[in-house]
Image (cartoon, rainbow, N blue to C red; front, side):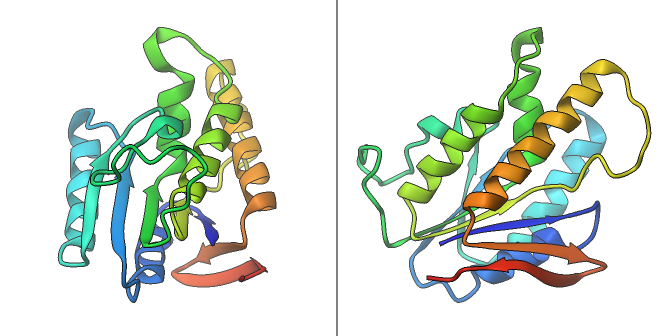
Amino acid sequence: MMTLVTGGAKCGKSHYSERILDGFAGKKFYIATMEPYGEEALAAIARHRGLRAGKGFTTIERYTDIDELILPGDGGRPAGVRNSGCGILLECTANLCANEMFRDGRICDPTEKILRGFRHLRDISSELVIVTNEVGNDGISYEEGTAAYIRALGEVNRLAAQTADRVVECVYGIPVTLKNQRK
């Protein structure tokens, strides 16, 4: 089961995403993609750690290459082998997209790499929750690097929504289901 949770800044995406896995009986992993650059990032990381404290998550700091992730205790499980006892929360696609796109001072299109990572995480878990941000709706013109990022994240979100079993948009703290094909 793959759930994509989207919305604007500070709309309740994280809280809702964690609640999806509240009753999950198996092992739960929280893949954190925000690199700790600067005071604002450190404050956001601390806030998210506080939100999930005591909820049974094992945190994995993974800024890039989720398509190659081997979970702790997974014994090097080969790709395509489902780990049915595992729940994964990936927070968040916007950071992952920026990390992959602007890695090593170069700009590349990270779309296929990120989608390959989503497929990999879906294959190794029984419950996957992916948090992303709604971007590109403000009508503002940006410099080309930022505009390319907005296009790439929009494409990742669009394609992820197509393959997700469930898509939820958080609006003012209220989860609104856009798609629900629960298995």
